[in-house]
Amino acid sequence: MIAWIPLVVAAAGFGLSWYAYHVEQFAGKKKGYHASCDFGEHSLCTKAFLSAYGKTFGVSNGTWGILFYLVAVILALLGEIQYLFLISSLSLLASLYLAYALYVKVKTFCVVCTSIYVVNILLVISTYFLGF
Image 1 (cartoon, rainbow, N blue to C red):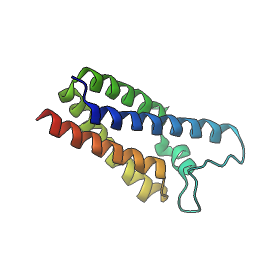
Image 2: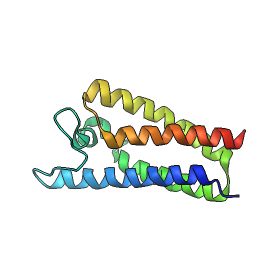
Image 3: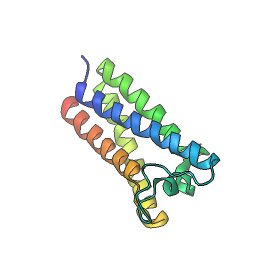
């Protein structure tokens, strides 16, 4: 049975991760690139994406997000809620670390990053209630 709520949430995460990847690619190649998610001096998603915390094991977090949410979408389509809950819980732990890095270390607000954190919270909550 398809898990519709986690499916929609995971699809939103996929879209946000795709956008993060896109912004990172353009910001790294085009001088003076201004992303639509850069709202002001203290709200810069490009600063977050290009920071030392924007990559994990040398791969952009946007790429990791695309892969993670693709797997999440597949698990939701297959109705594998317990596995989706497990990987979502691990992703939430990573989000807590990245949120700390973003707000404390990088000292900026990223609307895309924060939206992804919310998506991960919603994914854990929705899979918890569907699977247990």
